[in-house]
Image 1 (cartoon, one colour):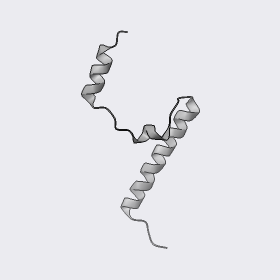
Image 2 (cartoon, helix red, strand yellow; image 1 turned 45 degrees about the horizontal axis):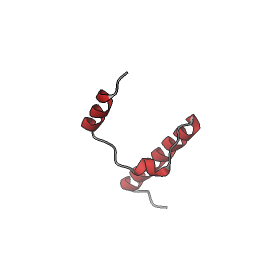
Image 3 (tube, one colour; image 1 turned 90 degrees about the vertical axis):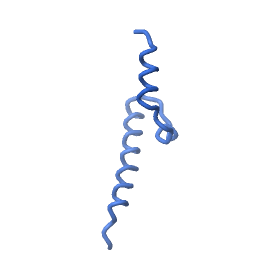
Image 4 (cartoon, rainbow, N blue to C red; image 1 turned 180 degrees about the horizontal axis):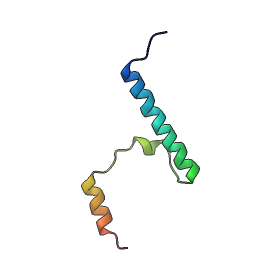
Length: 56
């Protein structure tokens, strides 16, 4: 059996990480879907604008 390439190892780790994170969220009771992992994340500036606009 041949040794997996570094790229194959990285892809496996990324897939496993996403799967474990989704399972962790589900076990903690957070609603999540597989599509949540695929959507693009907001930029730092967008997040700051959102959270600075909220009143405590």
